[in-house]
Image 1 (cartoon, rainbow, N blue to C red):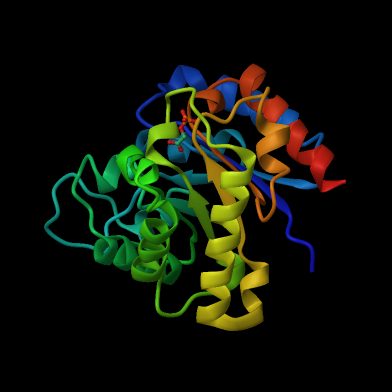
Image 2: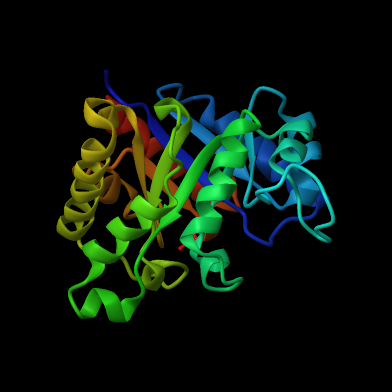
Length: 250
Ligand code: PGA
């Protein structure tokens, strides 16, 4: 079964209510490319309003807590995201792993909580620059995959995003050969873990994807889509990436 292309925008800590018009423009433009699944992950504060503005669109969170409720000031449970209209959540983004000290075990617990709440999950992995330069990128990322992957999961509700940390927000991107090698290695590790069903999981590339490089990056072996930060904030920048994915979807 062919994997559908998947292009996800991660708005990070950007977006006030005034940005909802832009989200609407993105979803309306994306509707012209029905072969591509498109989602936006705005800050928590906009999830409900974005869902109301585009009820048929996929809206997600950028993180969730692993517990379902409790004394966790400032945190949001996966069930709360679902309650607000989210259908997916990003977990393990490097800005949370590194910026907030999240471990593989915590990322795994978050992914499990999200799946239990009925959400789809985008689980992020990626190596720092010094690990890439020392030749350890694949080992580093495969260890993250093995240790953060839930014990059990529905293959159609889990995607893995490979995001080299040094490529995020920097304008630097790995070579297409390096991306293909990493994605192939992740697919092989997943096959080892769950067998042939690993072919159903979508593997996204993230890190400085834009309208100019999307076709090349999304065309690399075992790349099923993109997780996009900066270029997801406007329809003008995001829709060319969706269009590139649609061309590859054939
Ligand atoms: P970027 O961010 O596209 O701005 O590099 C990607 C991400 O962090 O998901």
